[in-house]
Length: 408
Image (cartoon, rainbow, N blue to C red; front, side, top):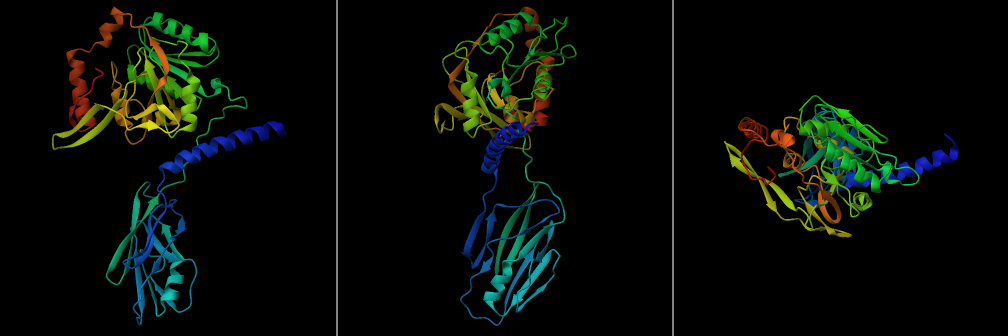
């Protein structure tokens, strides 16, 4: 690689890395310290240790106005051991490199100085778990939570030096027995985005060839299913963002993907959706209501959590329509359950609760060609056995006894 090319690449990588770290930091536990509480100062949030490694525990001190012959603190851990990084004069320690550590001194000043060097060493790699380290002085007990996890590995996509949308977005769809519709979709895309890559998962029979310039056609076993096709299509995306569309959608002048990209580039959002053949966005909130031994209840209601900062036409929601631009790595993280072979949609967003930050925006629109296909409808409309299977599947998988949803 030429030197100037390498420098340009490094600049783009740095920019993408900064955006990645910014997204990660928003999801991380901030370091919070409690000072002079009963009468201990200690961290209450924000400590993380890599499995098998050590960290200094910051912010520890004892505030005691009573003159005593001896000051003693004790620490205990479950998934690691405790030690000190340096020894302070007039301080005795016992239990170094064990799960229980005692520090004793006749001087509170020296004791507090010794606390500056307390070390936690992880010995059991319980990924994602909290080791609740106990800190005790006299009758005062507090807990110091330490998260055990690796630093997140950056997943960066190079947008190129010209910031071309073709390097940022891949359009993905799943088709079944609707070749006329999907060909119309491709033609409509090419009117506005002549070279953007399109990925099509197809479980039709007989098969018609859809392969073309920047169109990748992946053929699956017959009728293998809706969500299985989504998984296949998403697995072939090589760009940071993927646009999901149904095979009977049509790009129109209002289908401005650049506006979607602007939201994901600049807002704390993983999925952004628009209008589908109408003038009002779909705004839905999801929730899980705790139930009893029979199971919980999944609830879908109309409403939003408010608008996005800097994007007043975008509303924070939990569920959107089948027209959305998503961060490829976040969509893959949730995935699509291949058990849903005939229909599903809300299931993806329920499984994404707590993982996906979603918005619905009114400034991007796509057309919807609702021509009826009788051959397709025979498979799309579920029979009694399939509905029974779905009920049993969701009863077990989601531990639910009831579910209100409006997309069947």
